[in-house]
Length: 397
Ligand SMILES: *Cc1c(COP(=O)(O)O)cnc(C)c1O
Image (cartoon, rainbow, N blue to C red):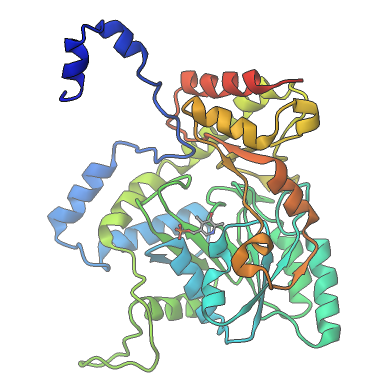
């Protein structure tokens, strides 16, 4: 009001002022509330169980088990915390090699690196954008010949697409190398009828605000192995030994999920199937409206599973589209539309410039051309139409 008043005094007609108001900004993947979160929070407050233990946590862990089929679940303060706990229960020690696809978010390996592990980055398969099992098999054979197998292989689900975990496990089981599945982006995805990540020694989920469902922050460590999850639970709660006083045989973490977040997460998880269907419908609407454009290719769906299309990602061939990815992104930004380049490969990150790697041409090519589009399930059709029109308008072919 204070800055509008002088404008009015200058006799500027209100209509022309309104016309200058930019259209509402469209974000990449904002939280989509169900309407049941407030009641769930109130329930926890009324019960008094706001500590990071108690019935809201147990209910959330049961809901995660039901949604994913993983029988043992530990709710954590973040997906990154779940990954850290996974590396701890697999007993990573300084100098161990941890292998991961280069095409991912840094949290896939950051906790292992902080524990002193050496990351080694492998390329991804262009048909799925996930870890290439053939390359992994060849690299494991070569590592065995060198006498230096990785301590852990991390498989990563990308933009809702599950890694072919069966192929990864077949390669790793031969050398008894445990597999961690970073399924932070895989919640709700399936592979051959099972939930993403099933079969890995341990998997990590994320309920961060941008994920397909959110607890307002948080994650989960999930596994078939009750002993491993019990150890992670002990470490997540400061590694307190059973004793009336504070007694510790190891150092732990403050990684337990607060009850209030668990209540929000339970309300959100009830909508997971609907959210998956809605993300897939958004993707198909983009595909129908954009695939006739020269030089535009949407992320493929791998034949082994069902992707959630957590984020719709596409590749821009500048020679055919007439505009490159960065110019397209800047144009969308100017039109009030948030988009993001796909993951910059970790071996190209300054922090990992000296890390060993195997291949990487596929990940680099994806990064050169890939863009993630607004994919929030709360997005109105008219807003998606704005995104589509802006992309079509940027084509110079
Ligand atoms: C989001 C994400 C994480 C981390 O989850 P947080 O809950 O944000 O800590 C890890 N890996 C990948 C691939 C992610 O996308």
